[in-house]
Length: 311
Image (cartoon, rainbow, N blue to C red):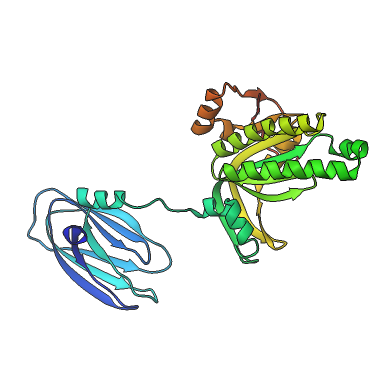
């Protein structure tokens, strides 16, 4: 199949130049270079020409150029200039059905966002994921914060040992639910949990399961001691290494934490990006949950944030 779709290809050492002479047919063509990820699309159409057309492609590490150029069927002089310090492998491919069929056979890939939100990966590579001076900008991640209502009174009423056992059991259940919904626990702060999920619907599903999971724990104890307050928000953030573990910073994290702070006993509060997500809306609708808009000001957040309670 590769032979069928390949018009020409060349291996170009660092600093070298090459010229490829092609005879273009009326079809869509791609000049793809896998090392620099550069792709030049050629839309070959119109009346054929006998005049030689020229095209210069320069590969460097400043940017990975992509674009589309319209050419006519006929001769093409393709000049390639490798200004990187590594070899490049530009290939000229026919972008027809065979190429699309080939690309359709690609296996699903694991994104960095999904990997960093995988509980097993975090457990195994707790201190080895990011260099201390490195930060990764993540364009979209969903944060879920939980806290227990009246945990201070719980310790005072039943004693430290019993209260600690209850809180530890609640942590164990939350960890299992987060992992089952493709998320990861970032850290625990006192009786609170901070978790991340690759998509909002996963966080909503986890929140609903968490709330229900407290019922059997309370029934076994014979008292409503474990009442979760949950807040969810989605948006961009920065992944960093702090105190020998991977953590997150940014406006999105702050909003998610503030939203959780608004929650009352057994309530789930989420922002508009979460409840408006099509998969989240479908999940909530199928379970008979209709988010109710609330009006709140978030401490330290200047812009107004729409908050919804999930009953």
